Length: 271
Length: 283
Image (cartoon, rainbow over all chains, first blue to last red; front, side, top):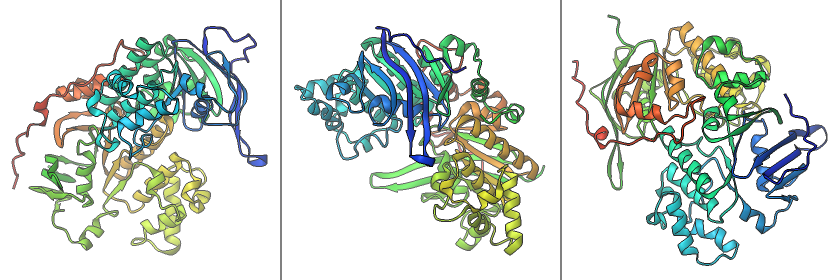
């Protein structure tokens, strides 16, 4: 079921509100709508999941919110500020992002200290050293990691640095783009626990993009399932846990996430 | 008893590094027939290096008491002898079609190249089209003429499987063949692999870090940690595994329908790294 466009005014509780977001790439005959009329809302302190397969538009939504995708139509409100295509410095103090691949998102020739000090320098925040130490403690790395280079860190440690970089500006909203899909399951558990703890302690609002329903079930209180640029279903954690999804595409994803079942695969439909 | 397809006894792989010798695979021993064998483990556990050694593709130093494929030793083969095995009797499907297909060669030409020693001319083309159909590509004519960048991930991976199976190998090694794919596409590609392996009576070594997938897809599972096999379990009984490492890995997985206060994390026991007893040499 595609949710009707919500005509209500955006409530005060909403940390993120998206109304009729449409994003298209290319022009003329080549034009492709990557995101079509997407609306959802995330309350303050909530963790919201966006689930879908590649090409579903989930990452594009996240990139629009992060300001990485300058062309879009619709209304996006974060922390009661309506967003324009260009974002000011203050925006980035409110909203930060953690990317999928910790091997690609850290500058290979900068030390951890420099990676973490840079956002502070950009925003003219003083007392970088103590802030870097504090944030490294927060992500449970400790200040002994300050002068290491990314290649001296494991994948999980790098992702902790990426999370520290997002947190050092004390944002209210953290956008997470498949933060653990490049990591081993044992490390994934550690990072997910860390993210959950930080959200609780700092009162953060998360928007988590993932293709893994189990991860979303663990981390999020509500979720949206996307397919071909549209939200096909909005559900809450209890519905997901009970397997109580209604759209056939969501149900197929549920079956697929249970493992290999030869008979079930033959019944898969192309959506 | 029939001869196993592959017999490995005390396989060791070492790398010389500036800081000393890195011993990445330690006394690995297993044998397999025409079945689906999974090797699971975290990154750095040696699972990829060990199967690369079976194809003579690891840059490390390989030693073993026994490394037999179909009763013949793979140790100390010449380049020409390797060529007669690699790609023909043992083939390998790589992880990501984006990086493993030749970007400047049409899919059809890559298929022809794969089977060049066996088929020529019209027959090669006919076999290639047949193979594309076997991996359930709906429009084989189009894909035959397509460039790799024109294919989706699932399609590219199917094309790669077609290339690997066209020579009718007896053993197929698949190194995380579906981890770059979406869940539903992943299962569809696995179903194709499953059907082909069964129909052609091949052996399959399936490397993965996805424990749930392996439990439902394979027959047997080898669990590796720090270069050693910790445990061998029947895939159906993976969830009743005994070794604390296997149990720990399984406990880390978030489970749909059972969200937890905090996920369990893996407490690594230094004892797991201690050398295990060697496999007795059988000849």
